[in-house]
Length: 356
Image 1 (cartoon, rainbow, N blue to C red):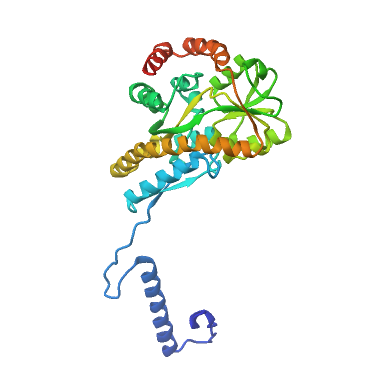
Image 2: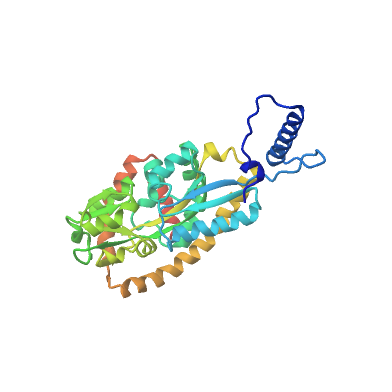
């Protein structure tokens, strides 16, 4: 409904009468008072009314599709954090690469244009020491990962990320990675000869599959489905949760259970923006990030069994690989990493010892 003031049309006079001037003045004062009430929150008695501050939105981005472990982890973290923050800030998640690919989001974290992200493999291209999690068959299980996290990750690797403007506030999971392709079942590294294989944007994954004989090519996850569908790529490697949630079973025939790498995921913030948040908000986010890990591991373990069954039902041909052959073919990758990254050999030896 429109007001009378909005419908009124100005009247033209040759000379304004005193009564007309009084009416006009009264209307102008009423208009100014209404504007002041709307903008300033002023009460009729002239006292300022309290104005509720709008919660700061903290953008959390990831590349996972709906139903992926990334999506479930991020949403659970946001739910828990927002409950504790009670309006002081609000975590809002953006999946499916809405805020960019992994590399783009890391850059945005450094610039302070987004607040949080959940990178995985790509961290090895940002900070050399993260390459330890790119070494084939290093992490035996989640208990072993827990010991590596406590004794190696937090004391040595995380501080190296901070020097690059990034801070890890929680270690979650991407998962054990397996190979899919459209040519044939992969039993040994020799079967990968000549296969065009999409890999994440991490240099040690490229080195690994070159050592195995494949033709690896880094590519954004958001571009993967189309690349497989059109034949630009023959295959790829990912945890089951990423394979299923991205519907790769629709464009891939063979699933070879190589388990060649266990990849953590890292809830990451940019130090520039992080340091502007109130201390209480930062503390809540850090505590919630670490507390969410148990939920992430529980869901990941459940998905491993359930999703394998669903991928079989979808028509994928599943086979086990000769892991001893893959382990033997991985030795050059360890040697190259040890030579290229200072302190890597000692770190690898310690990580292996923690799995004994």
